[in-house]
Image (cartoon, rainbow, N blue to C red):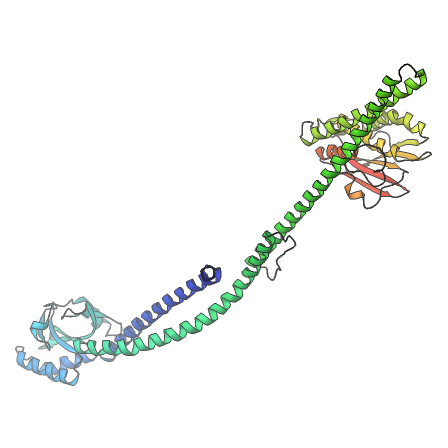
Length: 489
């Protein structure tokens, strides 16, 4: 449990946050210490910029003819007694050390770089400048300088290091104690405050991620109803929305698979029944003919053979429909569009069904304007669509009923309406009537095929990038509608 806890995103982010906070705190204290030291050094130089000129004025009485080293050292000692933190050097114009308040054996350099001194004098000490440390303890130190004159002529420079060795030791001790204690205390307080605020903020932010994780885990465990509550439009909200869309898609596919599985089981039962019925009928009548061959009259023999023939035709039709639908699904049958007259095709198909309509006392009519343009489609497949729709309309239209085919030009397409005055389709069955092997509740008890006709119609029109729709009410009739694009020369 502890191992899993520290593997969580919250603790990983928290650890990184605290580490970054610690590094920033250390960097801040370092920069604060460095800035404070530079500020103090620059202030010290500004305050003492006239100090070197003061020492040069003290040395003037001793430079009438020659430099009196003993007198110069005496002046240096007096000044050093008044301000022990400074180190005083007398330089020639080339930067060579002539005299100093420090014993010669303690010096590491015999010459000091003259360029920083000249820059300092040029701006009258108003620009922060660092110079070389003759003791060599530090590469550069803060200083003040002034020209040194003899008989009114410049012969060198008074060079004063404002932070001598003793001064550095005392300053370092103070910094190490005061600033270090102040920095550690400030860093500790800042870390505690920032850590509390940061951890609470991270906890609030990752709480949404934990909720998302719980939903995803439950969804993965099989609870497909789980969805994430979207609370914002940020990246987490976008991820939640994407998950919900994915979950809806998966749920829809699962429902479709369940429906297909249910349809498959029903299909097996229907096909078994549809195949078994004509086969049993054929077998029974064949056996009857064989057993009673010598005693059957001519009319009885003809009746039995006609029944066998009807069962054979029905069985052959079922097999053909199954084969046709499988070829359409496998795209072995693809449309070969060509321009043709849809009105002539409708007339041809209607004439084929005219005898059946007259036999059942059904009025079959066609309504369309003359000189309608040609359509561009596969004439053979569209003929199959019209045959299936007309066969369905005649099958479910009672005697003295009416079946009509209307054709009209709408938006560069010819729209076909197949209308009947039959028994209609129950509203609950309408969404499924184009599913393969589906038979509506009105004809499940009838031996009227396996429900492949409308599935073939829909598949053919889909291959033409068209759709078919139906409007129906029980005891009133149904209207099937589809459209085909007109041919443009």
